[in-house]
Amino acid sequence: MGDKMEAKNHEDTATYEKLKRDPTSSYKKKVVDLLQKLEKDKAIDRPQYYRLYPGETIPCIYGLPKIHKPGTPLRPIVSSINSVTYNISKYLDTMTWMTENLHRLPGLWFGLC
Image (cartoon, rainbow, N blue to C red; front, side):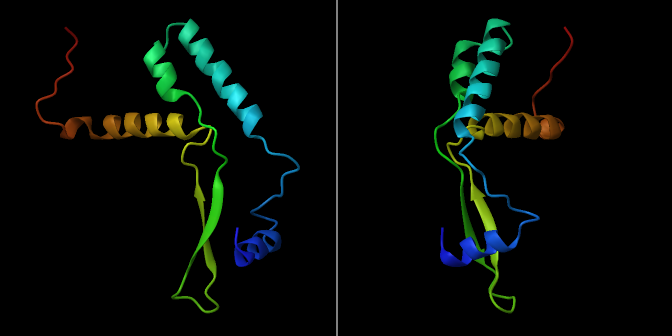
């Protein structure tokens, strides 16, 4: 993390909190336990279990400069690609999009036959 981003994080204690330890492994365990329960209860199948399985990457924060503002402050960006919740987030995003746009998809009919 760059010096300017590091300084911003230390200044803004209302938004950012320094963690004593990395919580990734405990979050991953919770996600895996939930996925195993869903698979056991037949709510998801094995291929879906693997698609939703958590990644190993720790989310990374970086800043993009707001060049139109005085002092060029940074806009914080968090990259969560391949993190613990990334695959679940992708799945939920797809389901949300399909739910919101189902009426726009021509030729699809989900009848109650």
